[in-house]
Amino acid sequence: MTEPQRHLHLNAFLMSTGHHEASWRLPESDPLAVTKVEHYQHLARTAERGKLDSIFFADSPVLFGEVGRRPAGKLEPTVLLTAIAAVTQKIGLIATASTTYNDPFNLARRFASVDWVSGGRAGWNVVTTAGPDAARNFGVDDQPAHAVRYERAAEFIEVALKLWDSWEDDAVLADKAGGVWGDDTKIRVIDHEGKHFRVRGPLNVPRSPQGHPLIVQAGSSENGKTLAAQYAEAVFTAHQTLADAQAFYADLKARTAAVGRDPEGIKILPGIVPVIGSTEAEALKLERELDELIKPEYAREQLAKTLRLSPEDLPLDRQLPADLPSEDEIEGAKSRYTLIVELARREKLTVRQLIGRLGGGRGHRTFSGTPEQVADALQDWFFAGAADGFNIMPPVLPSGLEVFVDQVVPILQQRGLFRTEYTASTLRGHYGLARPESRYAHAEAHALTSIGSAF
Image 1 (cartoon, rainbow, N blue to C red):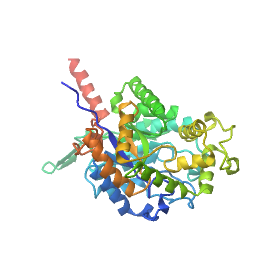
Image 2 (image 1 turned 30 degrees about the vertical axis):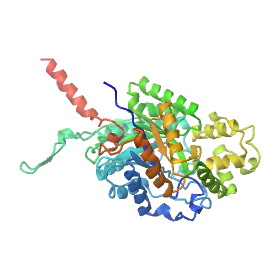
Image 3 (image 1 turned 135 degrees about the horizontal axis):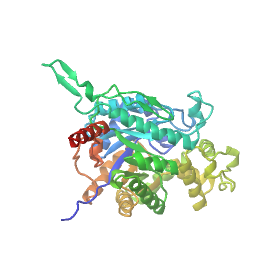
């Protein structure tokens, strides 16, 4: 008996008018779309029409970048997801939230609520949030150290998992005749006391349809990979080369197995910015048009912040300076810093050329070609052990997502690489992941077994 063919997992990473920073300047784009709920509802319905696993919103508790550069400001993503849940039925809904600038109880409640509102389609993208600007929004002069942020994140997730399990699945009785709504013995305080948090519990929301919302993680530093191996069920990552993607994939799967988890229980999804045309020449023309709309003075300032330099240190038509800070000196976004520097060094890019390469996906791989060539690119990495699927980052929205759904997805379906219909109704189901058992129900069953064996 042959094993069933593996299927790709596809997530749509949605960002205002598109991932290319100049997308808002195209005639087709609505520069005010960033705050229009109907814009995101249309994108979600488009992704659901393509049977994609999920949609995803990045977020940060800080105004990111210069407002002159591209549409700035974001709706709070868990609130936005509730509006999207009302107009979709199947597609997974993933939002980003920081473990550095939230508390476990509030965030666990928020994601459990989204899981209930959506019927079991919620996912939490865990980030630790780099940068002093975010810290100052919370009364802190500077960001905590990289290692401290990840230490806090691990404890934060652990508390959230305990809170989600604090109601057993059958705690709600709804016994009208007996006048008993719930069973108090199946709702537990968690009494968590750790280095960063002290939380009594229980959560004030019943255990949600998925048990736990899906845990997603996006950091690729050493600390990020350690956190992902322990807790993540999907990982968003960025790689420019097949060799780098293969190395990351093998490393993270091995780390996951080393902590006693099934490596199939973590889905690795590199980002890709597909610039699609009816011919390769048409796709390359669109990419050039977008790059020509970038305002280099804004882009250089953002690159300088990432590299911990001043803009004057980055002449547009020269390569990066030789004496850049080492990765050990970087306290935020370590993996993205390394990716950008290695890309510039490997391809001997000038600052102007590097700005163009980063303009489409901020370090994620950009691929320009026909629908068939895009499908080939996804298939090649999938078969080569570099990915379980992809984080699709359309350069322009909504057109980039529409062409991917209407022209690339059918090719993948014809090749047997992607579903033709949803076979599950939850986000966990789309990713082929089981609903987790409550740790407290398991502990009680073990205790009862132990008592019985004593007699």
